[in-house]
Length: 368
Image (cartoon, rainbow, N blue to C red; front, side, top):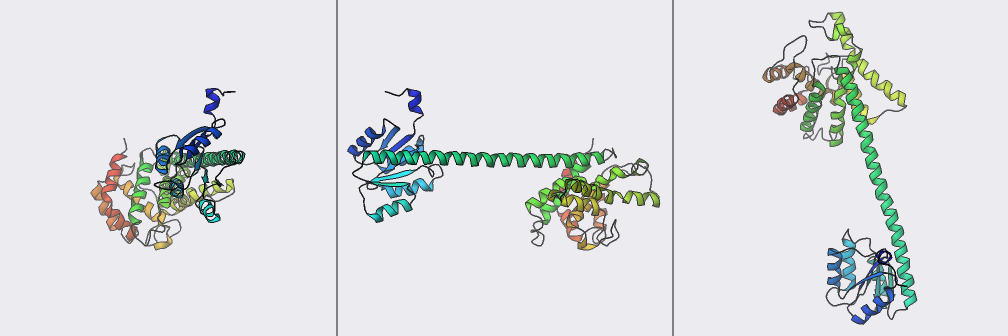
């Protein structure tokens, strides 16, 4: 019975490559009842068809042809990602064991010598097509799983980002004059880290992945402010010594809130490691006069040393209940005076190198 056009279109496609017209006619007659068949009478023609048309499901390939031989055709097929997975059966008069070994070593799936036996050819073609169908299915499944893992990873990262920003925003709403503070400090920290990553001493610690985590963690530096009473947090005048001691506890409150969240999950989360360092230690000073632990020098985590510069710069250029906004130049003067006392000298020098980028960030995310 003649198959319907729809049924015929679902048949596997086979490309026969041979320089002898009689062989092409013979293979076409043998295969057409079962498959969609196309032919090429030399290797260059076959490669042209494969480059510019739909790909077949299987190739029957002669070896001895004018121009490039079948071995070279196969080499080029296997070197091209588009044709790499098409099964190839050599169909040739070269019957020596060495010839077959070379063909299989190049990546052919099978090797049939002429004169052919029709049932054997049909059986081997069918076997290779079944194997290809199974391989295609597994490849499609692997691609799907890879895409699904990427999608879910992206979703988890998005949830992490939203959670961090939500927590940080909750703290910032306590102080309605800080506005876009968390957005600016994120970008200041990234800018500083990227500049310092050019220093070979810090390149290993400031990889692109680490810088991205720093960017995501920076908004949590003041999360502990949620635990500071309004009459202290929003006081327009100078704090009393007692009030300042309470204000200082925002560092430990922030750190402990993150630790409690991790304990609730039953594990330490890599993406919160910098957040804990920044929340706890961003008020430490290079000379050891900061708080809450009185750390000095490189005992202060690098993430916190970056945040110290970013946080102070932004506090200086921003209007707060207790002070007017400083100009960019005035803020630079203040930070320069803190080099080696308040701030890590290397971090402060990096800040001075990128000070104009800080100015641009501040302008882009200025408070209303």
